[in-house]
Amino acid sequence: MTASRPPSRIRLGINVDHVATLRNARGGARPDPVRAALAAIEAGADGITAHLREDRRHIIDSDMARLKAEISKPLNFEMAATQEMLEIALRTKPHAVCLVPEKRSERTTEGGLDVVGGHNHLLPYVGALAEQGIRVSLFIEPSEAAIETAARLRVPIVELHTGAWCEAVATEDRAGDTKGFAQLQRGAKLAQSAGLEVHAGHGLDFDTARRLAAIPEFVEFNIGHFLMGEAIFVGLHSAIQEMRNAMDEGRGFK
Image (cartoon, rainbow, N blue to C red; front, side, top):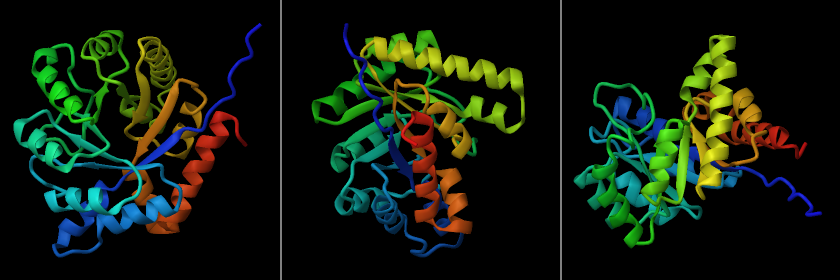
């Protein structure tokens, strides 16, 4: 009889976009997202995520260059699949690139990438990044069609969009909560069975991260806006430590 493997800790990636949002609201150099990234790593972050948007509403090109040069942990470069962003990513050479949908009109990413309809468009971007040794992730909905298409695109990672489920939890929509959690659970299992590393992100807070951590297929959560908001009241170190504790509790380490 084969012994079951012990659970592993979930990696925590910290998104520093909204430190740059606050900086850009007034202009100037402060608060500095690179300083926030360094503080997050000191507090226990396993990696740093930053989204360079077409309109540069928060992270800007020089932030990406400095993050790559100054942080000691992996840099996850979120970007739309455009030629401009591809060229920047190939110059920056981050540890990973997560391809995400992007619309100028949205306040934040509203859903997963349309990998089914966009397969042929995405294919050369995936190939160009992989050729340079950059790990490619696709930010997708936890649907069978999206996961199967991601596998056909031969990416090593998918990040499942948790936003709809987190919204259902926040609004006490019990039916949406139950359905959304089940979709994420099925999606994580399907993705792992297809040979994909499974990440999650968007809208996670202490409670939802704790619950999602109980799904053993997840190996990384990427969290930003919530933690930056908490940091205003308790400090970044304390907010990250509490998130780390919540994830460990959910995974069964505490």
